Length: 374
Image (cartoon, rainbow, N blue to C red; front, side, top):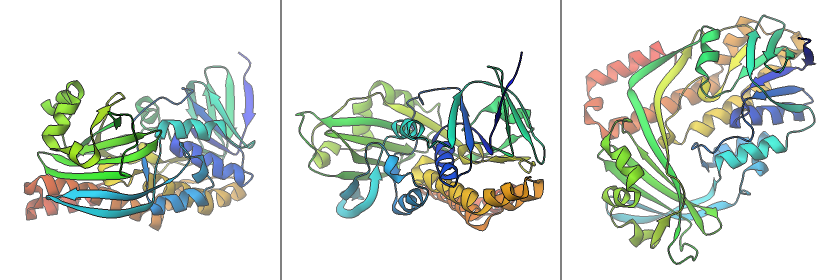
């Protein structure tokens, strides 16, 4: 088979949120990049669905804030219900969006310098100065750097000797679905946070997503085999009422109008990552509990640091050494965000599981942080 050669500055494996925003930023800097993904359009999955103020600032600096779908509109003042007390919270700098729709929007609006190839990867070869990706279609992509942003491709990770280190005590399970009022009118509030903080349940958050619709996320510390998981799927309204009594008194009578999506997560971080010519980003590198709201923060921080402070220097030097890679992974802002994300996960776990507040587990957590190099 004759190989169709494609020369590009950067190859990005995975055209999800992380891969796309990096491609947009690089293209705006006149750096050519090629995204490779097996699926187009991007599938409907449950991931981050609310943008916080600092995340919005970084998305604007990366030039992709306006590509959020639906068009970014501030959430506004929302209601909080915690320990029997209702209060107001200013969310005027928060934005609700649909993750999958946004990724597909980012794909469709890729600049000229960025290309998306929908194909399967057969082989990847890396070195200090030249990286090669062979695709099933016969294309051969050559670049100076490969960015792995495929969100958990196990076979691809193993081919590089990359392995995940898990921390069994950190896990979470989240639910996402759409609701509308039973009478078809607009909700009277912009959003609502209902804190349970018992029975392994963290909180429920509801926020406007357009067209008389609210998006609801429920965050728990349940394992996948918890009986409440199947109950949530099969009798969603009844289960919501069990853990969030009289929710309709706060937001109005409502009905669920979409599939209930379930997203389980366990903490892991990759090892053996200091390899010349390759960088791992996003969920591929370190998992995040959706309850913490730090997933987008981690991604946009990585994208900002990588595109502004590292890739231009590497391209100027023509090669990306293992030491270059080591320096990026130890970038102060990036590392601080990763520690913050993991510590926030500890906070939610400890809040719902008193045993983890003991001196014994504090020592274990410190040892784990050292072991995971956070």
